[in-house]
Length: 545
Ligand code: SPV
Ligand code: MG
Image (cartoon, rainbow, N blue to C red; front, side, top):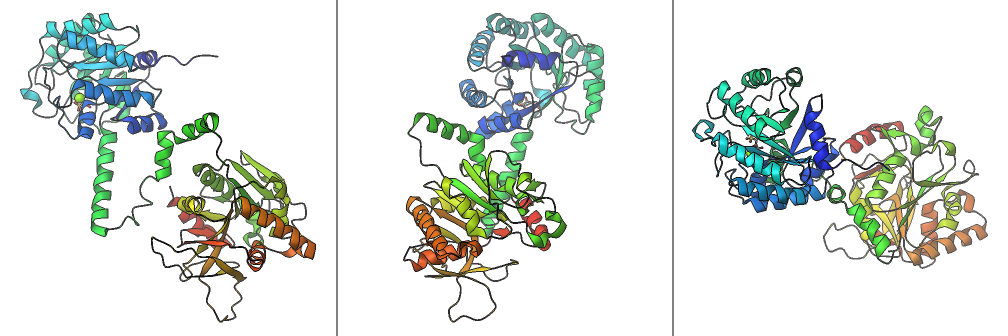
């Protein structure tokens, strides 16, 4: 087994790579993880961004140990190298030695120090007024760091601030050369101009004596090709994660303040489950399965045997569950939702073109008589695999994640999801109208509601009014599972199972005195019956990230 190179070696390789490489800024654990997930090969732990996320100034107001603590979180959740923006090294050569030791202990791959004086100020604030360090003193700091590092590949980058402070190109080059001779593994040449001219001139004069690093914050509009042509080793996008986060937070907070509601922002911001993902929740639940008594597993049973005739040629070569919505099949979308809710076992009851179901991680059960039978026969085909906690649903559903999550949280042995938004919906196909013990009062503290019956919409007026529409999703716990198994047996004994539907099963259960709980929702789902539904589904899927 080949081992991944150490992070120090990874950083060294980026520095020495013949092509232009990139680091992106991160300022805490979650942003570091996002940078790695975006595909970057290295992270810039920016002094500006780390101080800003603390809400303090980039003037060494945060202590160096506070910075190192942040680095520890960043390092723990990533595997790519982190280059710390170590300001001036937080003191003299001795502070630098201790910093290097502490960074190595936390697997930080390198540190960049700048030739200014402690406490430093950000280069873009009155750069010209900032005193530079003495060259010899700064060289001593570099040497001290190099002498103390334990890993030969730990990188020390020397940052030249001469151009920022208004000194000449000759002075910048003189300093870079001295730092290189003192052992620096690379030179960061900084500029506050909006054009890259002085950086390019420096690069030309420097002519590859050591890897050259730049921070195009001010000359951001320069085409990246220009840096490649100038043989720059590494470009650092130094503050963009922080600025993106601040912008998003300002917009969202203003919106919530004005609206006094979060209803409208919910789908513009990261879902809570995505946050869990970034926190590595899946690893913890896998570990819990290993180290704690295994919790009861929830399984999903997807009824997907039908072709979906009203979709015409779209289902010529595949069942409805395999048609694509926004680049992903309905089944892929469902399995992603299951994964989000930690539903590990997925059973798909297939019939029409069952062989085309190729979504990873699902168990396919066949209903060989799909052409002449209905949903209950399909459900019966999965009966031998029933477990004590299961969600049963139609394969043509799209829904917001919270619907399944809330269903899993709701009490009851058997719970059906009913949409109380009857008016103004565009639902096509059969409507399974639900008559329940109470209408949805949409209040926080809901009274228990149970199902009275489900009726297919016929257009004929009935004396009582439906309180919603069953969306095609239910959940059964251990006793609910037994009720279902028993009801299937009874209906089979009656001899008419083949043509029956899930609503028939639910009505049978209610008639037998079983309590079927109702979990109300209000919109935020759709099913796909006709071509028209597909456009809506595309929009729905897109707005759902
Ligand atoms: C930082 O990211 O903190 C830097 C780069 O040092 S700059 O802000 O451009 O000085
Ligand atoms: Mg900085």
